[in-house]
Image (cartoon, rainbow, N blue to C red):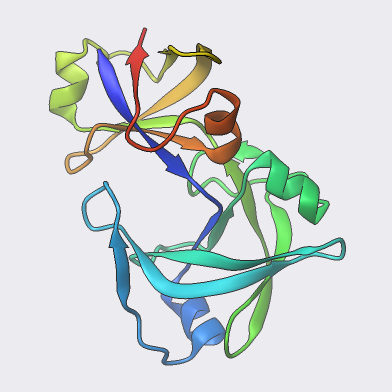
Length: 185
């Protein structure tokens, strides 16, 4: 079965409280609808800072969450001199510390992870694919730098749209881009 790929660049998820600290009452505008229903890239960007370096213009994704989280690739982490764990979204155990600089203020938090490879799907997709008892799968990639991606987690939710999320390191290593298709093994 094929699944469409969505490449996830570094980004920030915020609580409403942290948004208000970082951006005050800055108007939030939806810049781009994401594939998953209700999720979008906003007009807000922030700078990520550590003692070693910074990354500017990092997009804030919305809606607000119950936790603040920064998702980076390993390449981003090298640039910043940090070693974040690979985690599911929302699992901040052992997360690396970062300073997020907004337009009004900055905050420092242990909230940086490298997101697990994962496939969003709804229960109907899960049933059609015969994956009811699976928590993770392998994905095969065709092409000049093809291969197999192990440990691809399944994220099942009633409103999810079928899509594989990879960070830029995984995608670049296999010459994948958003909209490409890969096969679930």
